[in-house]
Image (cartoon, rainbow, N blue to C red; front, side, top):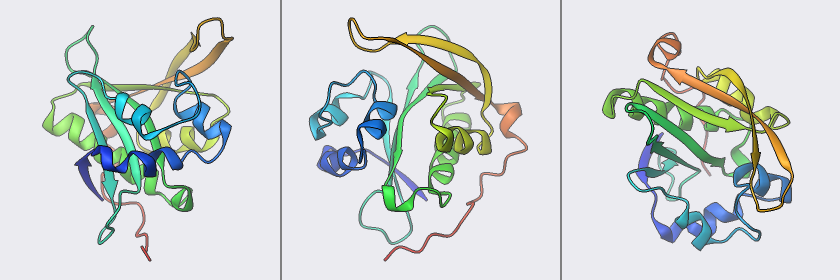
Length: 177
């Protein structure tokens, strides 16, 4: 998998990967529906990186995510808005993408740790993150929209020592039609 900076021309493609209300909520609970290209493009934080992943010989990205520095702590980054093209889910593409992002964070940006939050019922995402070296370190409560309900999320974290035993080699070879 090759990582490239996100280009707004892919906004509609990425927005279309959230194929259900649940997908859209898990991906961006603070984003008012409907999900649009403009909203995807606006997710990038100052100093952060919006990234897409390309499989070999693919003309279009197959995954999207962001790696943002945490303002409160040097060498601590936040992984967010990770989504994979629906037809490729469950095939290891998400894990390959997340591992490439972790490789970037730890080797090129000198991160010491990378954190994220995920809904407890997003079992596929939790499995993906754990396979990439993330460990559950706690729970958080968030209210994403004014007046909305408080939501329980799991906080996961990876650091250099937890991923040292996790190979960054590809998990699978995915054939692209």
